Image (cartoon, rainbow, N blue to C red; front, top):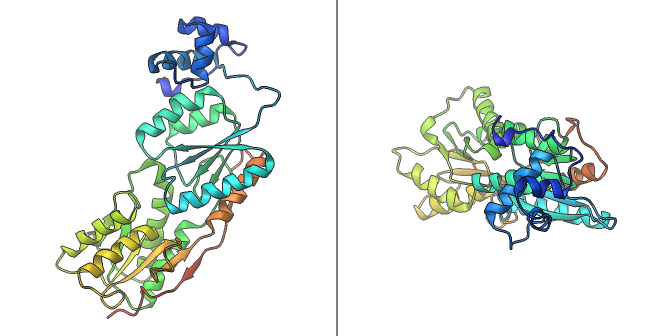
Length: 338
């Protein structure tokens, strides 16, 4: 097996001295390494972590131990994730649990978490926010035996609270079709990004299904992939669409940030919204109302609170999924097709 797939089976009763001996360091250095002390070099810490993994060793809990819950999020500073993280922290505090945030939005961040943080055994539970994992990463999570719940996504074998992403995207697209639009484009998240795969696929399926139900043909040149999900990504892909000989009369963006960026680019180009192009977003970001953006509103905080309560109640090892309702909020960026 590769290192990332290694089973932690040997030395169930191992202690810190055995870990130190295997790593070739003193017990004190081994302890500092496992506790993340910055005085230990990266090479030494990696050696100690490898020894701890081989011996299935984790730091013992003290009698006054306060449970530590890890929150895994792709883009912690963005609106959806920030809302969820805030609700998780507010739900954990009355239960005397602490939260530690881990940004897993890039390959290096994920590698660091799975190779350096997770093996320390310091977490008492994990809440995953709208993220997916590859089979090796899922196996590493499973080996911990920790309770894990999911907000706004799907991890096999783990309970979650979210929305029906596919149905919501279908509603957004049907709204445009109902206004008479037949030339509809999509501003999509990156379908190759592992940690956002489930959400992207579901929203794309909803978009495709709505077009198919209406007998409309998908135009590949109007399916644009944004770099990330920030407003700048929406600006870039809208400018990309503006170079084409013909524009769609409507756009569905997979997030409000992308939709707001697209609005800015379209208006800079002298196009009226919704006169020339209608735009619908997704989330009901706090800026959506200020931008008069038509969008799909989802209850982010409620999803996060319920998923955290599931964790506190000890729910784990099942595939229970609860889907909360969404609603279409019609504002000024959508109108009848010209």
